Length: 254
Image 1 (cartoon, rainbow, N blue to C red):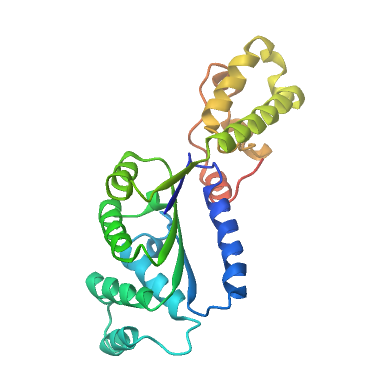
Image 2 (cartoon, rainbow, N blue to C red):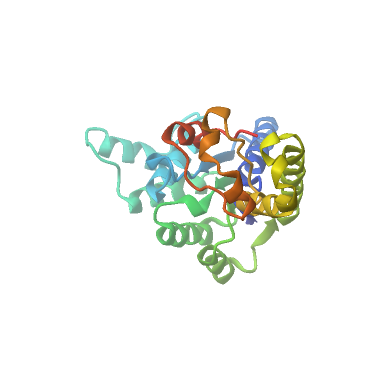
């Protein structure tokens, strides 16, 4: 069991995606057909990617998708709920997933952004119970921010088998990149020319406001919303017009 943690923007999701692609390659080349890979990305922006039920449904689908025949527990669950307008109960999903994993020789699970789950307490309790029941067959990678409740749950229940990897060093390198970018913009952006004495204050305000994640360069048409004097006093704007929020909501502009 490996817990990958770091601040927002440190690169956890990118690293998880890299691990997934590497595992896909390894599993596809494995001579044992009973080795499986499944993964899940929690996302606070997507209601379909937040609950324990969402997680278990996705893992079940992935684990049986390449099987020559469906496990009896999966077939039974499907037949019972095929004509119903709701999902199986969590307990039924749990037992079916556990039964499916028991039929495999080895299962690799990658779960990204646990901290974005809707009901984190329920998720952690269920996952830890699942790990206790299947730990001999399952290798699992979690990623999240280093939240106290996640840390406490992992260390209290899985201390002997838990390994951790912090992305602090990577975040430091990101911060250095951001700092270099800010320095360059202060040199070339004419709006900052008259604030030479406040240059260091501006640099620190922008760097601290970025929190090691990214720097948004304001489009020219929205320049009036950024008060350079306020920035020079350490005040980074936290609200932009709706059109700009939409532009920066799904993309990072640097």
